Amino acid sequence: MNEILARLRLDYPQFNLDVDVSMPGRGVTALFGHSGSGKTSLLRCIAGLERAGRGELRFNGELWQAEKVFVPPHKRPIGYVFQEASLFSHLSALGNLEYAVKRAPRQVERPIAFDQAVELLGIGGLLERRPHQLSGGERQRVAIARALLIQPRLLLMDEPLAALDLPRKLEILPYLEGLKRELELPIIYVSHAADEVARLADYLVAMEDGRAVATGTLADTLSRLDFPLHLGEEAGVVLEGMVAERDREWKLARVIFDGGEVWLRDGGHAVHSEVRVRILARDISLAKERQQDSSIVNALPATVAQVTTDEHAGLALVRLEVKDPQTGECSFLVSRVTRRSAHLLGLAPGTPIWAQIKSVAVI
Ligand SMILES: Nc1ncnc2c1ncn2[C@@H]1O[C@H](COP(=O)(O)OP(=O)(O)OP(=O)(O)O)[C@@H](O)[C@H]1O
Image 1: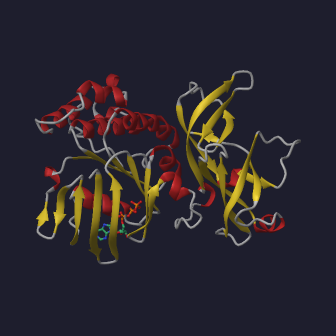
Image 2: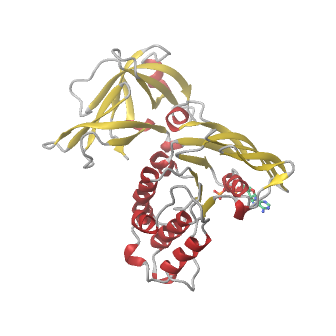
C-alpha cells in the first residue's frame, strides 16, 4: 500500500512522457536522467501542476488522477522545492515560513514543528533576513523549511541544488541527509547529478526520452551492466556499510558491508555508525593473484559475474560478486578495465579474481 503508482502520458508537440512506474512510499526516490529526459515533467504531473492527458496516479492508496478524477495541486498533500528558491521577496525568512504555517492543514498526524524545521535546515540565525540578504544556498534552505511547514506527506524536489556552485551544494547536502534521517517523509528528488543521487537516493527511476528505462534500489540499478544511462566516469556502485574500526595512527576506517569490507580514509564517523561507500568502476583494478608489493590497501576476493563492452570499444565493464562464504551475504561491484586486460585475464562469468580498490569515497 505504501507506494506511489504513476501510469501517465503527457503529450507536448515535440515530446511525449509515457511512464508506468511504481515508487516506494518512503525514503528518497531519485528521478535521474539527462537534461530533457522528462524528469521535471513527471514531477509536475505528480504535483498536479501539469495534467497528464491519460493515466492514473495513486499515492499510498489515494487516487490523485484517473479518467474522471483530477485532484488539484492545492488539495494534494505535497511540498514542492524548485531549482531556484522561490521565496516571497517582500517577506523575511520568518514571514515566508509563517506563510506556510498558515497554509498547512489543521489536522496532521505527527506534524513537523516550526522549531524542528528551523533546526533541521540550520536557519535559526537567518530568520529576520529578506531573501535578497541571503546566499543562494541559504535561500534554498529557507525554501525547503517552508515546504516542510506546509506539512506535506510527500516532498517533491526539482534539482534543488542545480543552481548552486559546488561549495554551496556541499553545504546543503548534509541538511538533506538530515531530513532523510529525521523525518519519515517520502521524497521524490529530481537530479541529473550522479554524486547527489549516490548520496541521497534509496531508489532510482532512470529516465530517458520520456520513459522510465530502469527502476530499482540504488545498489541494484547501479551495479547493472546494462544500466541504460551512460554514466561515463561516474559509473560505479554505492554500498551501505558500517564503520567497524578506526585506525587512529594511519587515519583509516574499516567499513564492513554485505559480503566484504574496505579500508578507507577516516571520515570521522564513529564506530558502529552507518555510512554509504561509493566505489567508482575506474577505481577498481583486477588481478589473478593477490599482489603483495602494491600500494593498494584493499584487495577483495571476488567472482566475475558478467563482462560487457563499455561505451568505448577499448574498455570493458566487469560485474563482480563479493561474497562471505560463511554467511552467504554478498554485494556487487563494477570494475572498468581495458578489453585487452579482460582478455588477458580470461575474465568470464565464474572466474575468481582479486578486486583491488584504489581509492574509495565514503559518503
Ligand atoms: N510546457 C511545455 N510545452 C512543450 N514542451 C515542453 C513543455 N515542458 C517541457 N517540454 C519539453 O519536454 C521535454 C522534457 O522536459 P523536462 O523539463 O521534463 O526534462 P528534464 O529531464 O527535467 O530536463 P532538465 O534536467 O533540463 O530540467 C523537453 O524537451 C522540453 O522541451
